Length: 337
Image (tube, rainbow, N blue to C red):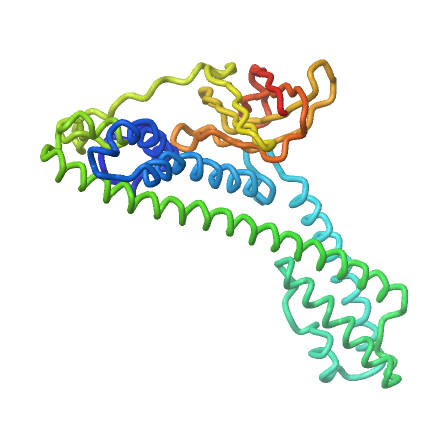
């Protein structure tokens, strides 16, 4: 939804981007009136691209690590991790019961139960199972050195160790990707906050300079003149309606920014939950998946940028998705030089 007031901190990412682009287009004509230097004006003209690039990175990282089952979409890395967890947990419980029966058959249970970690409830988290597997392996090694017979056989320990290493590696990778997503969000948010402060300063400066909160030039800088500000109780401004399902989207254009960066501008389709983006060499049958989770809510749609695209002619394909159901695809070509 387009912005309809000057509450900059309450803007969605799409609204913030729209303000920044409007400012970039208008500040060249009116920045001198506000006594901004040519260098300051040039910086403001780059803010929109800076924010859009940070937002694109966040969306790309989020798509890579999204652990939520949504409308039939389950991401491969999460599904693989869940399978390893389920298999490892099942094996752990069976092996635990087997060893407990053996321990009870030869001696009265004592601290060895606690040493193995068997007094705890069954693990419910990835890291919890990792810890229990590690505790068992470490205790096993100590008891073998002491010559204590209350240990599992080598085959069981080998299997437990394999599960531990597999699960530990996948959990570490998952946590790393989550950190990258958090870093991408933090960067985008920092840029958002910096731009919000700038917008607030430019807005107050413009009103003080032009001495009119209803000056039409405010609209050319990403602001809303006083008489056009929407207030609660008034009819909500009607957004432009998306094409009906199954589409295609009414907007799908490409722009090359240089240095391997391709910007994809797309629109929504009614009832669509996500957008699916691919590229391919024109005429080839195989498509390279670019992004599997482009947002399709109006307030979240922003230009998406693919980085490090190889040199050559490329065809992009955009498919609106309704759960697992595919809509009508859109195609566009661009040359990367």
